[in-house]
Image (cartoon, rainbow, N blue to C red; front, side, top):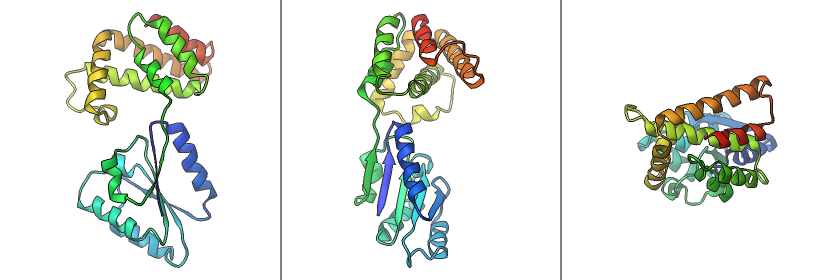
Length: 231
């Protein structure tokens, strides 16, 4: 059996993944970015896997591994032996049908973020604080403020990277974007400009440091409200 856990809602997908791992009687963990056919075969045979079904947990196989013959061979190997063991993949993003089609018989567990969160992130525009605050409070009716803050920080970091034309190597968030997503975020980035983005990113960093040290002075929700008013 093969299970692929993926999606943008990292908090929920991670929880589901660790729940499976905790319930496993003998979990085997392998690094998705560096695993080889030899590693996999030795792990399975060394643990006497084919005599007793074991569960193998692999993180970021699709996200961090380069495409190539060895990657294809690993996937085919797992597919051929899925009756004998259970492989559980965890990915920190949503996978495309192209990425998962080689494992056609796998079980897909996708954890999406709510539409209200995306609407809120889209509302983060200059002089749009009132609307953004309303959408923020609607979002935290169902989502934890910490997750929303993480998504805000990731968004602003992406916008800042898109504003820097001198950068030769794009950050991971940009590499993952579909063309239509990149185009939309480029417009959002241009609306702010690099100088403004540097300022609001610095304020996010201050909030994060305050959370870590316990010196934030307000609740996280209040801190985000103040931040939204000032953008």
